[in-house]
Image (cartoon, rainbow, N blue to C red):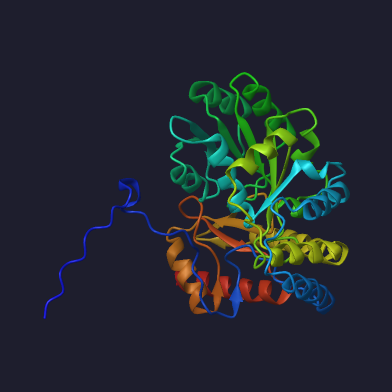
Length: 376
């Protein structure tokens, strides 16, 4: 008995050759590929989360609060401590990861006939947000050191007249933080366009001393939005809680496009429980910064093919390094030795997340062994 061919799916033509986003998820001893915090929540954090979730579970027959004011107030309080910027709860928005926050922004301010701009290399999901919202996508180029030239950025904005500009600081995959002067130059330019400027600060808690947050500019620039996440500094990648700080008017625009009840009662309870332990959770960030700086210094002393490594300056919890004639061979060699890092960024470069001291040692040993074998 023959089965008739299934009819072709009426897929949007621009999606026909696309593949789902995702880094490899492999079961190896040392996972340093997706910029996770390597330290699991402590028993007291877990206990608080379990207590709050148990309370929320007793109300699961009811929908959660659509606008989650208590969580927004907690996040505003956290930012006042972390960055010294006081915001009202109404200036905060949250969603299932900063990915959904970004999608809300493109749904509200992008769309057919509109353009979004960023500067490559940068986070590989940005063009997907644009694609999914039928927003035209344009990229300028970063300089050799992965910085953004303010004059070139302003020229691109004036030529393309975008409605959304995405600036990652620190940038993924390079780790580069943007000087406030560069962000101000872009913000001054969009006042004439106009456009929403999104500064993606997913890794902001890892920035080096003296590197300011774009949150400090919010009171002067109503078209600015600053996004954050609890995935990295709060060791809560599995929670999926991202958030944004902006003017009340901008936040209200996002409320129009969000799905009803998009943050579950369990997510809200877990996030608020984690925020109660912010002091202990953020204490680990200082350790990870120190581990990162030591890793950068070590990589700068290494050589490949007789040349010292190139190592990008980083204010994040990862390091971009290279360059390799065949980076895939190096990536594969590390994987064979039980260490998974990320094959991303410009040709020849690799990115490694900052792990525990034990994980860093395993990475160093594996990398030296791979290079030695490659050069024999």
